[in-house]
Length: 232
Image (tube, rainbow, N blue to C red; front, top):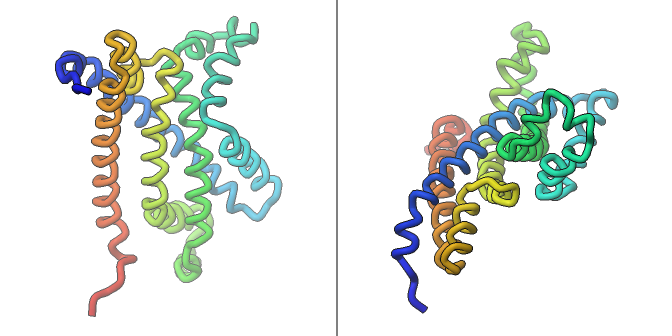
């Protein structure tokens, strides 16, 4: 078997366009997902069942159902309701990019909320006591101490979630978006060279994964240095 480099070389503009689509989906989804995850995480650590239970139910349902099902429900499922088709939101729900970002953001918000909630629960009690001794209110305690500390400690786990979301964006090609996987599917169908098409897509994902891992390593080295064991 001979790898056809010429086809891949000629198709590189399509792949680079797919990279831009993939990064757009990833960044928008992560940003919205993190905004949703922070209040959800605060709800998850609440001792009130009326506050905790809705957040638990949300994260349980989202994490307990496949991402592909969620994407299909939003992109294809909502279109069957006349109320949605006649509403002012229909131009958005008929847009594949909007639906993909919405599905990915909802999915990552559930996982990120659980990561942050676990990090909040693991906050050393001494930090809380020190903040209370300084007379901080509950809101200021969360804003200045608990949330920043929890987010820093959650970086290793959150990096895994970001990598998983990068790979999850490949599902966007199913709803007609030309991301990296969509570019590979296009090349495969045009030239009947699935091996070359998808091995190239895998190489692009591998490069993006390497870059993200390095960025998170740098972030951990900077913001988690105080947790490293001291050298004597």
